[in-house]
Length: 467
Image (cartoon, rainbow, N blue to C red; front, side):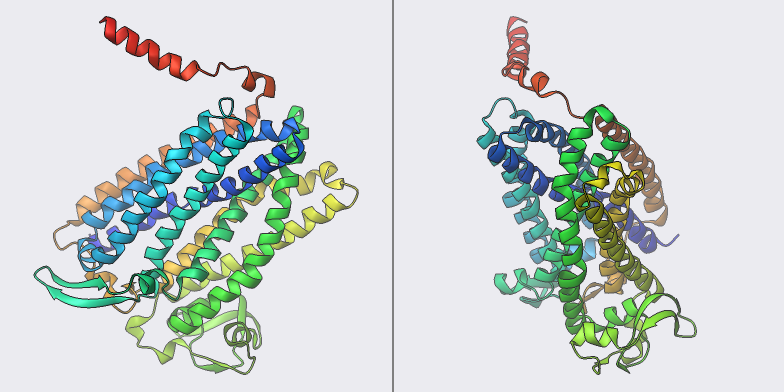
């Protein structure tokens, strides 16, 4: 049993499962702020009712996200100690900053957001929601700084120490603003806003289809989420995606070649819409648009795009895996634009969206498509970086543990599978319960005693003091 392969499977499993939740929390955070602003602007009680409901959903997403994210920090030490030793002075600093500056900010205001709805005034509660949403985005900023440094390392020096060869930060600004950071940050933020909007669209459509007593709130939810979803689905594919592709072309050309299954240097290089890569014979089959890749990569249809054969074969990523992940992401991005156009057209055409069961069912399924698109987009970035764990500095095969045994990783993989299946089933069960129940009436929420939680703690302390 190859412990390195099993360790890679373990990190892919745990990181992929965790990655379901941060985009949801960032997207829901943005939309909660919009709902809160709508309430302050109109004083319409439906917006406050929706705030109470979606804050509960946010709390569930946040809890599972935290529980699944902590695991990876331990994996850096148990499964990837050589990597941790090599980049700990840089990567560790950025992760520490994420915990100190972002996670504590988000967690500090989380209690006010979850329990302050009928204790704080509307403005103070909105401030708490905004700070939680800001903290989630700020947390992603630091994580993406660290990951972007792995993709395009900058602002470092390599030194020999008693612990071996290590990378040290020589310029904080260069490390933070590594060339791939801004494109990756914007791409991830927009993907998160799309994911949060898709979840709201899904739930709003479900209310209209199955939970008729909340039809009015379902319409309000769609009215908030649909513009966000439609606008950013276009921005993601056209502006953010294009900027990201240009960055990959400049700094990771072998990744671009794998993403497009391009084997030879090609002038007026075509872009494959859908296809399959035969790695043995170095041939890519599929439907291709002539010159489109050259135009997207260089802004010139006659530009030459480097193929895989221009690079040493030992530096090639897994070509077909990278190719399929990338094209699935692109295909789902186009589908999301189509869904936005379809739903928007029905909405603008005499509000026929509320009567179209077919379109509403499409909206219900949108959250799953968006989650898959976000996931395979991240897979594309990580698969395409191989065989490097730090681009052109440290190979993945050199980053693992020299003492970890294969059966140990295999057993822990089995444990993680059981645990994560259980956690996901619990998440779906609790989320489904909240959706089926729907928002509580505003009167029942506002009439709950303000001091109920503090009185509970006072009673516990009183009993302990008597004992």
